[in-house]
Image 1 (cartoon, one colour):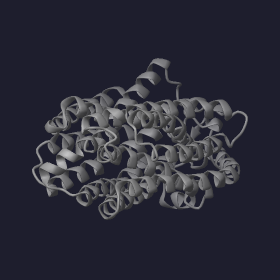
Image 2 (cartoon, helix red, strand yellow):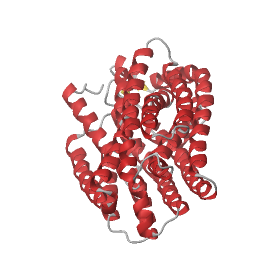
Image 3 (cartoon, one colour):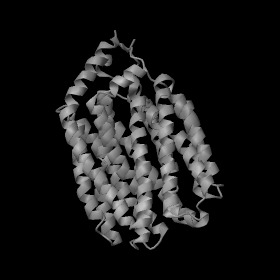
Image 4 (cartoon, rainbow, N blue to C red):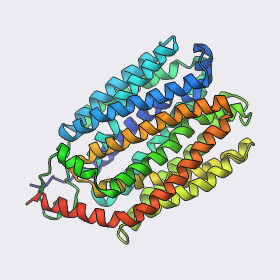
Length: 426
């Protein structure tokens, strides 16, 4: 028996609520960035120690993915979101009371472990609820929560002031707990694979079930590995910018103080929001004409991002840099919905969450290494060379990966559709 279609009202409520939780998820992870200078001064931390905290966040997220992804594919995804959200929000609240570097390290790492619940379970849940023809738009909306969450952290820190850096942790912790309870109350668990074309056309039931053997088969699909690589490239750029940009702007006297540096990032963040929406809409419009739609959008994002990053790191006046950063955000962030569209087109529904987790494991490991490397290289040379070098290299690698996906994606997507059809019971 097919899954009854959801009402428009419910779909709007679902997407809006998950967007809010995702925004808080990102904000909690980024709360340290705009107050890093004040925290470092109070706790006596160097750039190397600050980079270590950042690395610990991503290493803990890596471990969390190994737990939350398979759990989401085996259990009720709604419950995974609720439990994880309440845990990470409580830890965020407790972060306001740290008094030393080891305490900060432990708090940020444990928060990050719990936060790993959200992406695998939420993205799998929403794409099994919303019709596939709207996946580009919905995934674009979910993707824009990354810049919005970062903006929320920057704005709150700027308004409250870096001297009172503990207050935002208290605020976001309470908000997250409330949202977790709202998910428990409002969200329904969909059937896995319910929005696949062959399942909908047959008004049938998808019978695939997660297993380690099935996931090992997924890891042999070329496009899956390439999407993992693309996700790592874009995430390395975005998380590096989110964390190191405020320090970069103040250190090179582009912005006069930390509060101004935080606000100065808003044009880039607005660009990221527009880019996520643009990417999703472009993919939905192009997919009826070509299966390579998402790969073409990804290539545009990586190539355009490389050009604009070269501009950004060679501008040292605040207003022109803000304008260039806005364009960088619009162009580069069109890749976000493209990554998930391509991944979900080549993996079976019962492995969605674990596939997202596997990608997150890789990117968190890479970002952890890069975060530490930026800190060490910054102490040894200059932040501009360390920070800018990482961003440019990852954009260049993203171009190579996107070109490879143009070749592999159509065949792998066709094989996935055949597999889903074979596993659909009328």
